[in-house]
Length: 378
Ligand SMILES: *Cc1c(COP(=O)(O)O)cnc(C)c1O
Image (cartoon, rainbow, N blue to C red; front, side, top):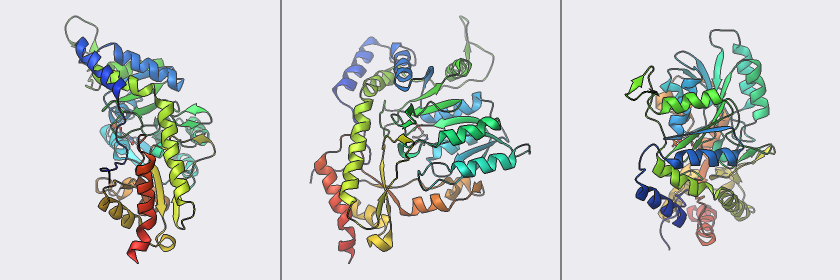
């Protein structure tokens, strides 16, 4: 035994340490400094995007995007039920009404047919859809050709929640670059991390400028503190940006490592009945942020929860897939379109250790433990 195996721990090393110490020594330990702009430039270049604005978190980025796009009280905002709470929280922050949508079983992302039907059905009514927050879940892009076409036809604003998807692509275009704006997260458990942080990515200069302005307390140019609107303290920190830049330099390597982890699980479970890994959509390349498995209790002989508890006994961290928002107490009574697919993904789903630094030996332990669960229960 060689210590606890974590789900997706930060993978940081000498380059990140040096960047942090350099920045510390420069005394630019603040929300200004060369690394914020540098990190924004690096992200623009990697994603092929026109603008990027560094903020304090992916959640802050989502909030600012909705706010700046004019989404406000009473507006209907569509989002997948199968996501992390932050997506839905951003809708609540602007006082809008969430409209939760089921996932497609083929991609686990928001079902584009349900979205199109609902957008058309509500068009021209007081409940018309104002904005869509598609989520690139576990690092797999949504079907953007379908989603963006119907949104363009019905004047629906789109903010891509690519928090989990840095390094993924859709038809060879980078995750984060779809819609009016895209959001990336550098939280500690994501594919790259700066400890915490986020980025808004957009082709729209005016939108980027507004977000940048509002993220720094909406301070107007003047020697004194002058404010003509309500702002936010949401700017990225220079110390963390320095670390983020060191991380970003290794994005391709990280995606390759995550995909290798997935492939090893696929090999390990190939002959096991009742274990099914998250499918990859033919339209793109997922970053495989987390490898997720669906456990069919009848065929496998144990439930996802049995697997999780057994892994925990062996000091291996795993986690149920996202609990859908429509099943969360905080969103009780929220409108939901469909729901059977994401409920099933939650009931049968488990996220397995997927760190980019996971060793083959550690992963062997995980695979052997998973495969051995039904035998132990007999
Ligand atoms: C992590 C995450 C966020 C929030 O990002 P933070 O940087 O942690 O605020 C938003 N949406 C999804 C889908 C996420 O996984």
